Length: 215
Ligand code: 1Q0
Image 1: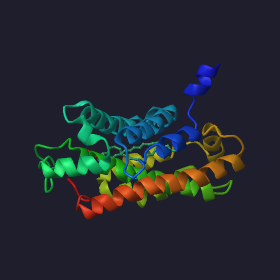
Image 2: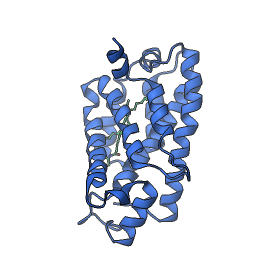
Image 3: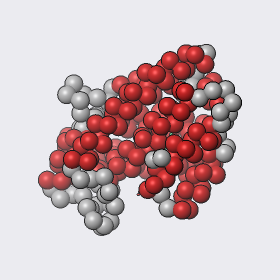
Image 4: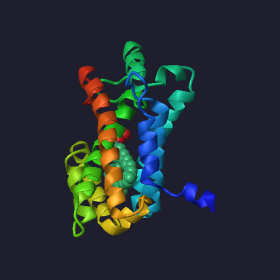
């Protein structure tokens, strides 16, 4: 039975993995960052196959990062900071249009970074929502304020349609596996600032390095 409990998604697990993302000097550890996404993707898959076009892309991007970590220069990919420095110094990033480096760590993390903004906005909405609020609307609003700005019309349509299949707020709170609604809210109070912090550190780095529009 312990096994099953372990396999079950819990918001706590998200909290713990994103906690372990930051090194002592506040750099973002790639392995933990990818592990955080793995937990989230597992959760998304449990919501049904309608979300699989989303999780497929997330899994692809996680795999690209795992390959970098397992590659010859894996140690250069220890943190997002060391990755940016390494790839820029060695001209391993397509800066203007997609070319030889369509799987650069820099562009891959940027996509996940934009998704992390969605997650932060969505969780913040869940935290402050009331019983009658619709998850599909919260999700759409969070999406419009983040990822949508980088997506084509077709993807925006598909995503927005998938959001209608999201479970209701009460079900959502239940599958987070934390306990009562109050307990969920209080864990969200912990999780949101943490995710914000990881997002902010990466955003500042990308902004300083002029990487926010990578093709
Ligand atoms: C639970 C609902 C999940 C909603 C996730 C919102 C994201 C919608 C994104 C839909 C588009 C995905 C299809 C592919 C897009 C790519 O074109 C795009 C750009 O990449 P590229 O290589 O073409 O330039 N890719 C992306 O923008 C990356 C998208 C990654 C999405 C990852 C979402 C992972 C979701 C996690 C589950 C969240 C669970 C929420 C509740 C958590 C409770 C603790």
